[in-house]
Image (cartoon, rainbow, N blue to C red; front, side, top):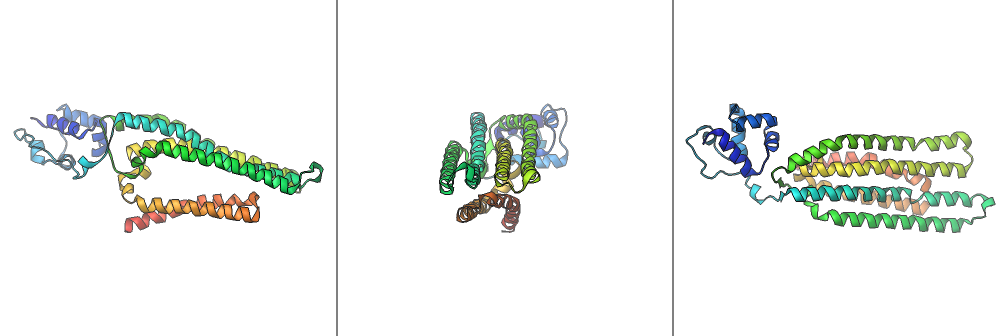
Length: 327
């Protein structure tokens, strides 16, 4: 058996496409195609890499008279890794695309939830409207709790729908033939949409500051006007965040299947401490936000807590990753 036939046999035995083998070898698919078509032979360095990748000797690859006596895969654990089929990959991408819309909407509702409280509180300060402060506060809190309840229900429902695929984020896995190629192609097709949504999200978040400054310019003593402008800012910021979340979830689903970026095999190995600290971080941030807002009733400024938490979070993740690597 010549080298080209051996390479085809080993690649298929591993369940890899030519594209996937090319990624492993850091070469183009055309190079792999030429190797398998006996049009060219890898250099010595790549031949050694192939032997390590498939768990065979270089003699087996180079010498035609040596036949396969039962090769080993490169990792002792490879046979124990979960394998993702084409059907499972498509189902995962579909459910993530569907839940991304729900989660984006739920997040928008959370951001929007205190707006009625702001507006009714400001209206109660104007005697001409005849709205008692306790009534305004009560109605505003009811609307806030209803919106938050709906959002939490959506979060839980979406989490249940994707729970079966949690291993894609936490575990190292292998994909069946053609899966990586399909996902990589869909990711490339989505790249333009992902970029566009991020641009829209950034634009809305920046424009969210315009109503605040506009209200201050027209009449900085009119509390009702400033509250209305603040509410508009919340709406614009919520729209921007929704664009970020929807496109981010879809993009992350591709990276999970390809085990790239934050879901690479190396990062998964040091993931447990990062996940724990991240979860605790946002629970603490939520507790601080609610505790401060409810105790002071200063909802007009307490949202800054989320801005600060969002800015600090990348630093927390970075420090956690450094500590994880040292450990």
